[in-house]
Amino acid sequence: MIAGLSLPQKALPPKYFYDSKGSRLFEAICRLKEYYPTRSELALTRGRIGEIARFAGRRGSPGITLIEYGSGDSMKSRLLIEALRPSAYIPVDISEDALRNAAAGLRRRFPWLDIRAVYGDFSRPLKIPMAQGRGRRVVYFPGSTIGNLTPEDAHAFLRMTCAQVGPRGAMLVGVDLKKDANVLHAAYNDAKGVTAAFNLNLLARINRELGGDFKLRRFRHYAFYNAAPGRIEMHLVSLVPQTVNIGSHRFAFAPGESIHTENSYKYSVEGFRALARSAGFEGEKVWLDPKGLFALHGLVAA
Ligand code: SAH
Ligand code: AVI
Image 1 (cartoon, rainbow, N blue to C red):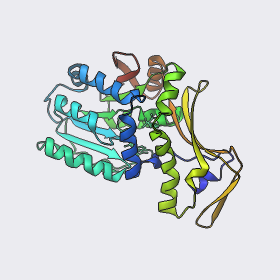
Image 2 (cartoon, rainbow, N blue to C red):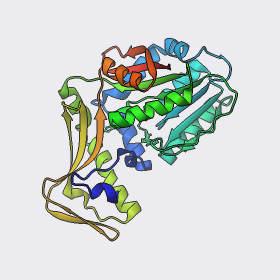
Image 3 (tube, protein in one colour):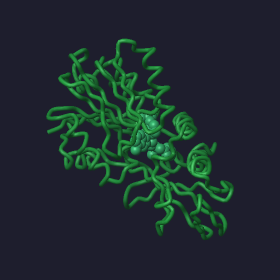
Image 4 (tube, rainbow, N blue to C red):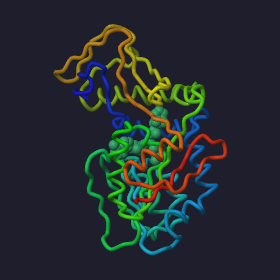
């Protein structure tokens, strides 16, 4: 946080949005009428689950290990687990309460499933407790969380998962599509202000956990589509000249100066396939929701 707030363009990594309050706010975003990604991905997953499971590994084929990065409430994973019947499910998330609650719910629903929740940061090397000698490994990365990484970081992440699944191993990755900027704008500037609360919770979290003294009313949520890099940018804009303290560190803000808190990259089908290919995957399948807003890519490690 200190390093990010010391940059000429102040910037904080979006992974810190997700304390337990942030995860609850994200789940509220997913229910908003303007936020189409969750509904679109759920609709396409429900509608094509047979094909998706056939691609990932034959239903009931022995010993599939399903690893999910950024599993959150594991809502979409339930559909995949039902259809794929893996032997083991490894949800990985940086939000401990969300991860533990989701794992407890899944244990009740799928008592036959070996669930090994991993609380950690997937942008760093992580020890995944995989049983040796099992069947196919399948990595699931829904929600377009990959869009929150820069294309360079997404490339490095895909390379890592490519090595993790091994030759002919599969990855299913949800990716938000490029579209009319007005639709994007509405999704990240909802009328109820839930996205604004999600963004501002980052400052509240710094106050709670790091002894910061941000005055939330002196900052405004700002999100816009930046067409050249193809991403939504979220910022928190200082409304007044002010100084903020975090422990012994002081940060000055000019009026209008922002903290860049998130990128959410949008990809065309071809654009994402090219990125996946450069990381060692072949894009074998792609499923779109009926409105053509969101894509689920089925990748195979070359
Ligand atoms: N997969 C769910 C949740 C997406 S929200 C869905 O599709 O709806 C993004 C999730 O990724 C959150 O649960 C967040 O806690 C997690 N996350 C974000 N950055 C992370 C990181 N660096 N390491 C681990 N988990 C991360
Ligand atoms: C988790 N991630 C894919 C969300 C997104 O759309 O980039 C996070 C989010 N930010 C604002 N609204 C939702």
